[in-house]
Length: 394
Image 1 (cartoon, rainbow, N blue to C red):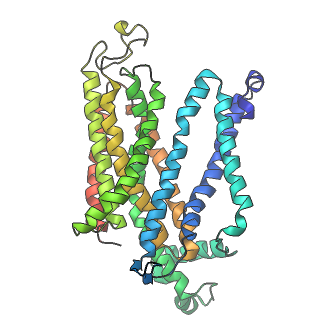
Image 2: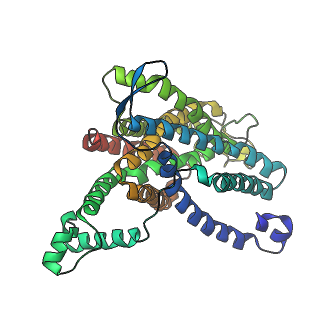
Image 3: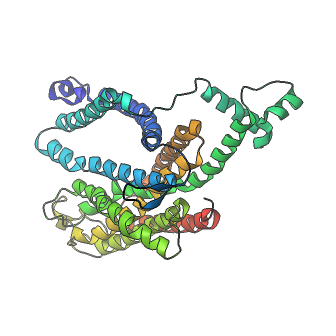
């Protein structure tokens, strides 16, 4: 924020501030996102499925995994409330200045930090193991040197073959085995994130090529969190109970498979919308870049309303796969590996950025129809493959 105020920009501090902000945001997000989700679920408490008696005398089954699912749904709902700040920040940037948008974010983060500091004694906090990271890296090194065999890290094998005692036990190796098995689920996440990121990139550009009726095209990205806020209560109240009634258990991998299929459908619809845009005057397949557009003043004569189904279908898929992915990582990991598995999901976001750079040359007119169709095809293939491999894995 400090380097975006007018005097700092006039002094040439803008670029340096931007680069520094990117580095700090990367470090902060990497630490927060790998910790906040398991920390939230930890507040539920562990235990096994059991029968409890309510004050009314009714006996009910308490299922911790079902509770974790509900907690992550609420957690993701709250995330998307925060995402609506884009509506305020874009308006503040347009009518006030960029620094006011950054001030809004600073205030929100400061409030959240204050809540954690003042309420720290009320939260369940898992005691970190000082040597855990070193043990994990050493065990992984043993696995790699042993021909990618998990059992190569077993203390007995290390003692027998290499004559050395390792600072972990057999249970640690089994926890590592389970964590690596869970990591297979996220192999396709870079492609999923690539499709998800279209909300903030090419779909915004697509909206700018249409009649927005006075709405800034970058504000239309807020349709995604709005849809998510509506869909999450509907899925919890109606969709999941109906799936259970129809003997289709809403297990994490089932929801993830269905979510991936819906992401593929949203990209297919986006391709169809782009075809409609390219079929409309005045610039057809070169929106905003023809003489009739008068230097980008007049977009193609298609209402941005035709893009709404893309956001609705994509948000429904997002609710299914994103919430389920965090839930799956939490339930599959041993207590001391929960943050590590969440960090692996963040690694897939980085890999998505690499994919985004690779496909960026194709993200221009008149090739956007093909680009969206390619995303839809890639997601369809990966959805089928994921369902075939992991439908019953949990």
